[in-house]
Image (tube, rainbow over all chains, first blue to last red; front, side, top):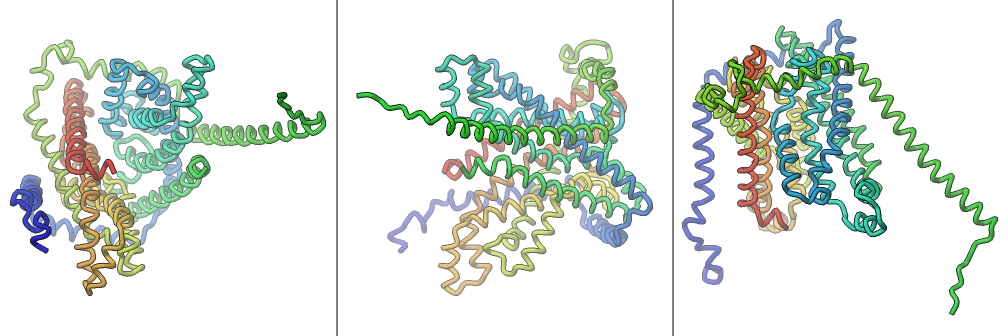
Length: 271
Length: 294
């Protein structure tokens, strides 16, 4: 067997050593990182026992007397996610047309639009939230704007990719029958692309419920505000109740948007 | 030769036309209903989120002027006229950025290791028992649904301020996210090699090692790189809650209105994210070019 398959059994040393070398390098950086970031075992285990105490104190989850406030905060979070995502989608659609290769063939025009979207995306939602708090003040409105801006970057990219993936034949047909550029987009491009976009928007509403829970930590409204507050004052039973509320809400949104997504794109995907 | 165009009798045509119109009307009605429900939800959400268009219009100038302010130095000049003044803290910021990168690297690696250990138990086709699969799946779900920064908040209290809390938060979140993706790869793996190896009398561990692992490592590495990219972004805000990295500098600059510092730090973050995106993309193409194409 050895004689018949020499390249399986006698690989050159470089090929055999490449993988272990990479693993060793990866772990060397890991060790360096652990040392540089002050990972001492004593601190780790002290923290772990502390964490054990905290988890014990979390049981049972108990909202105390503030359940109505929490429900209101949760509603606020869902509102932020829904409004922010919708705003982002509305503004991103025209811009994404500008970034799509089959709509704007000119590389010079597309390039700045794409880099603009990239820079917006490179900045985290939390940072946008801080910026908007400076503009419109503390509260959920800042959260809506933060989600709208940061998703605008993500949608612009995703939508333009969906548009580029669309079939060009309809567009050509409309051009052949004498339609204008706007007609081409309205009747040739949008019908196949809209269901894809709708699916993506629904998916983002889902994932934004998650992001909306945390922008409250910097003061942009929603349930994160309550969560950060209760963690700071060490009310662990309330904390665990809030975390459970978030989990349930996210699961519910997952379920609903999954159904809706299937209703919108499922039939087309099957047909 | 004449072509016969069959024209339906008037009466039959009218009935068909009516049916067509009805069907279209029904579809339109459904669409209208959907739009109305959606609009109602939006209005409700607008009330819930205390949207105030007047505030927005009054202060929208602030948004524009905010960018104007962060692009202006203390002496009133534009930032790009004097790089030395604008990026005065570059040594410190680069160090903090390095810390951010290390946090995400260490966090991703620890998370990937745990996900690697758990994913065989979570996958449909390789899990030794169904209750174990259920437990592991719920655990992973919990780890990825609770936002990383919430973990960071709790860990800052348990482990003290500093990057350790950030690393652990990112590690847990990555375990959840990667565990799910990894197990999906395993579920797509070909089971024939497993049967072959099991037929030689090998243990479960040997089956995983020699039948599944060779098929899935490329996918694992690709997802882990993608996660690293996401974690760099996440680590850049871990400092907001005191969990280390460049976020700490940024939040101080924003809260204390050091305008030009804000833009300088943001510039550093954006460039870093770009570099990481491009280089991991390149690395993925380099390592797994063949798999990605097929």
